[in-house]
Length: 208
Image (cartoon, rainbow, N blue to C red; front, side, top):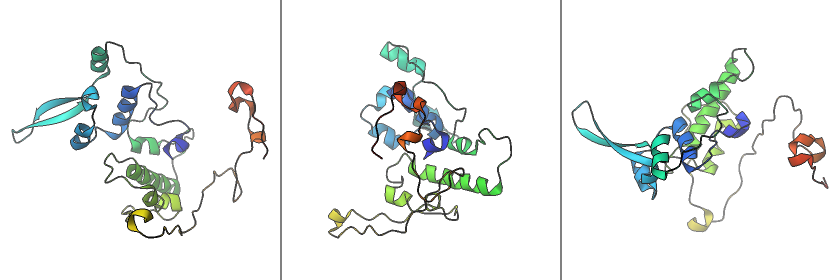
């Protein structure tokens, strides 16, 4: 959804480290228990001891700098192209795009709903991250009134694990099309796409 919103990837990366750097830059450093659970975490993270206000020493992990990582790998780490200036998800969602007009209250509410959705599906901890079924219940997907206190429903065990038949009956989804498209169901046809859309201008044949 975030990439559809922007039209470009939110975490472009030219390598494993660069990809991870983009993610940490926007979402922050993962919790310590998740960092140390990774079999290659020492390749990307370094431990540091810091003293708290109570005088106690605590260990925390930070992502290595590009210089540190490149020095250890004996190779300068390339930086991927930066498409946007935002550093956090709220900054990304609040961007007004090309329009200089302030956001209407309705649009501001929709973006806040979108931000809430992204925070749920991009959570680091898999125990807290929403499953696809839980995400489908969110007001942003259902196109219903946004509730800041929304809590996703419990996602039961798959039918084969629970010994029950899978009930696929759900409330029909409401698909919001762009404002400039008027229609209940719409998808681009190959014939409607410009030549520049295709590699080297070679338009594939289509039977539809």
